[in-house]
Each structure stands twice: as structure tokens, then as C-alpha cells.
Length: 101
Length: 101
DNA sequence: GAGCTTGTTCGACGAAAGTCGAACATCGGT
DNA sequence: ACCGATGTTCGACTTTCGTCGAACAAGCTC
Image (cartoon, rainbow over all chains, first blue to last red; front, side, top):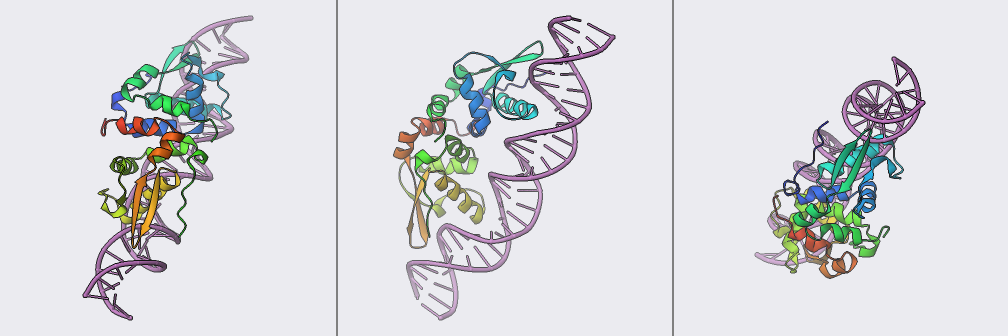
């Protein structure tokens, strides 16, 4: 299994913004904002298994998350530092936004 | 003609991100970042008239721009201050990103 | 008013995105 | 070896999005 995790500098801003411009994915990002890694299955997202998998893939391929395989589980974590280096302030600004405006 | 220009606080952050997550619209926003207002027609966007109109509408309805009608022209300007108040740092972070990563 | 300019609106089209169930793969445990 | 748990992949479907040409609306100028 090859997990595609691109370099942030190869990801256009518009791609990062697109990845963040979805309620389900933003919820995932918020949940990961604490810094800890977390098993994919532990998220309460209200969507089917296939959809969840899809969203994690979008986040990963946009360079926002990194995934570690451990047994049958996958640990996801936010690429906070890299993101901060590539797009300073962007993630913080998005996370600072109210959850339901 | 009623120009729909919502309050920023009523616009979900995902909507703002969606509006910014497009090359044509981001180019418009960059061009307006200087602060001056500008006539819609003066943008070199490489798309048809109808498409251009569509993008300006998306930006306006996402709360990113304000439009002033003057004769047959429309002056557009960025709602920088309001945006900064509603989503501090967001616009700056996006604008700071390289044009072609 | 005729004609031009600026811009919007109206379908229409194809591409992309979000969603799901079902099937599949992998690993752990019994 | 079997079974259950965790995820991915595969169509399929629906909705949304970006794009365009054509038609329309409104204003300016001669």
C-alpha cells in the first residue's frame, strides 16, 4: 500500500483550500488540531465508511495529514509544522473560525 | 437590481474557503488585494464574459467583495477589514501563498 | 433613437465532488 | 483456519461546479 503524501510546496493553495472547504473534513482537521494522532475509526462523522475513507484520502493527498498504518488501524495526524512553514497562518486562521457561523 | 452581499458572520468559513479555492477567483482577489476598487471588465482572466460574471457573483455572495454600480460598469472591491474582523489572518495567509506552487 | 459597451441571466453541457452499498483486503484473535 | 474488525476500492448515483454562447437589460454617446 502506497500512501500518497505529497510535499506541501507541490500542493497549490487552491488545493489546500478545497480540502478545507468541506464540513466533514474541517471537522476532522479540528479534531486533529490538538496535535495527537488518532485512529480513523474513532471519528464521529455521520457518514458511511466509504465516505469517511474518501475524506481521509482527500486530506492526505492535499498534504494536510499523514497516515501511519498499524495493524488493521490507521493513525492520522495533522502536518501542522509543515503546513505552517508552507502556508504560514493559514491553518490557525481557519481553526480560529467559529464552528457554526 | 439587488446585489446580495451577506454579512461575513453569516457566511460559514467553508463557504469562504470554497470561494477562494479557485484559480480564477483567487486571481481576482489578488488583484483587489491592493485595496483599490476596480471595474469588473478590466480583469484579464482568460474566460468568457458569462464565466467572469459568475465568478464575481460567487465572490460577492461569499462576502468577499462589495460591488458598486456606476453606469454600465461595476466597481468591485475587497471587503478586507470586515474579512479581517470575521476571519483574522485568513486572507493574508492565502495572499501570502506563492502564485504557482 | 440607433448603436455600442458593460454586464447579467438563461439554458446546456461536461467534469468533478460527495455519498452510498457491496465487495475486497489485511490483520488479530480465538 | 475461521471469524470479526478496520479500511480501501469499486461502480453507481446525485449534486454541484466551471464553462460557454446566446439572449437580454441598462446606460452612454452620437
